[in-house]
Image 1 (cartoon, rainbow, N blue to C red):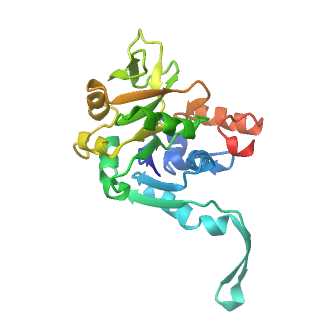
Image 2: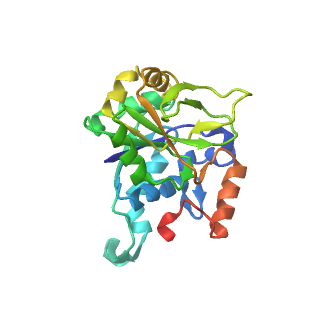
Image 3: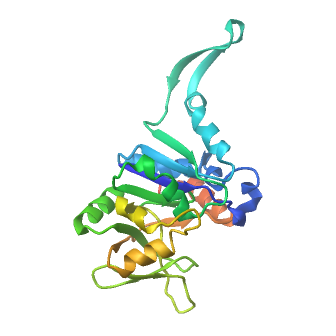
Length: 259
């Protein structure tokens, strides 16, 4: 199953670093947060990725184009036209497709632009700036069990994200913006989507979190997978520092591959 990662935004709230590199390439623990997200999926056996690039997309492409050499022990013989000998490597079993989906394209538009790479199959989707210890195997099983078009991971957090109104069976009856009276059950990403979701995306200006999700919720085709563990988005420099601190103290819940 393919994993689509939205990695094309400007990351203006963390401009201290996003002026130099795209937000998903900002490092925590010496690795881009994008790598951490992909490593979680890989830990559950999902190794085929489609990255929706945009802002400074060349940085993402160059990172993976040179990934093998950067993560291997090598000898370069300068006297022999830079012949490279690889002694050992510790690379991931990943297949990474990187698509330039446009500089100012909205999230829905980015998904629409990679439709041909999905091949009319169910796929996973997440954002390139949030880490979690969500059990992706259980998430997928839940999606398959209810037969709806879309499943999104729901998490309780008191921040300004899109709010989910749920019924007793965890069906999303409404997807809307946060108001002052909300307790904060939000869309944390880590979604599973049937290919029919593409029919609800009009074009490049479509914001996925608005019309498409609102429409599938209205017809009873959007379910929530309740996550009670860890989730955190890296929106600001303070968020980055908090994630760094968790790694340094060896208390990073999302790094399940080290447990």
